[in-house]
Image (cartoon, rainbow, N blue to C red; front, side, top):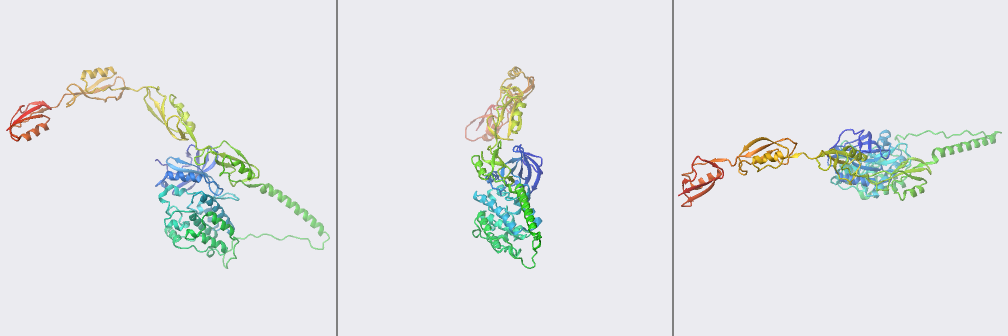
Length: 600
């Protein structure tokens, strides 16, 4: 697996997503604002960094991305696609223009009580959709809550659903390492698995921070903070912010109980209890700095009683008020009243989306559709306006239905020219590698074959190897081993080749005068007129006969056999001394020659 590092701004991912600017960068991933060329829309592309890929589990990441892609809720950032770019896995998500909840807290420190409760309710709505689908977020914190610019209604978006966990697979799912210490549930610190109650705990800590401007446990050591979540009960938020209503404070401490069984069972149960509590600020304690207030003029000039023109003035005033009211009503209708938030159609499919939109008071228009790895065929892939955007009542929502995974069939290219093949494969942005080979069937420059073969379906941007003919194969060296030198020369001339340098070498297996080997070797490609060198056998290497007379017969036999002789013995006893030998000392004979020795 090859990986790319650094800022990828300008890259064209999967031949579709053009990275336009780096939005955020962390230790595990980078997020880019990107343009989807096929659907002509802005998306966010999150790419796992080279440093974040250590211990990466691609199958877990892919499965988790597909599960999240099936989630469709106005308070969850939608996942549209996933894949691998230059060895780095990525996911394509809904682009949310705006800011994070952390940025808002950095500016304001704490929120108004009713505002904090409303934001928390929207977070819980999104979490409940995930809990119903069997998914746990595991890392709820202000950085993972997006606030849509100018949003009304569903302006809160929960992001990074389960993907941090998916990056490292099952091996780390029980531990706290992937959660943020300030919000981590006690059971994760103890190594237990995450459950919906874990998300409830983290959301309660988040609500505590929204109400008070601080987290209950903090410090420079993340490990110590995590241990405090495990070992200590969180204090009542009223200790830090006395204006928090008692009922709301009790709900926060109950939802942040160290024992999961004492918390609301899931996000939906937490949301229902939150909806039931009073969010009116309590009477502030002495010495507490009050929240900023706004002066509003509430007086109105009224004509003095007893004036002769008072009734005429009242009539004029009534008319003026009526006109102002009518103008205000018209202005309200034109500017606000006839608008609402676009409903989310992302959970629908082709069969139900029109009826659902009609129930919501809108018309539906379908575009040409778009491909998706995560959304099943005929499911709603995208809509315009997007969920939560301002839209006139009764207007039309354009819906993009999924065409399913984008697949292309490798065309039949055998016999086409290289340029023609590249043009055909370019229609689905294939990454083409051109190889060359000899062929007796296809002339030089024509395509021999492709890998994957013709007819196989591949993704856009898939790698395809095209093998192009270099023409007929060149000449090959014939097998000359064992031929006598004259026959070898005739064989070379018959194949359009010439005899090159000739040398000799002893051989125990090739007869004298025959070819031991050629250079180049047999079957090697050569051009017409090339020279082929030959090594000719001189037969077995000669051996000088040693003098073994007077030696022990066994020692003599061992010496002679070691030199390559075939030894025959004649002896009176089983042991004895050699007194004669059949070949004379100093003679040179062929290796393997027979020699007799006699002993007594």
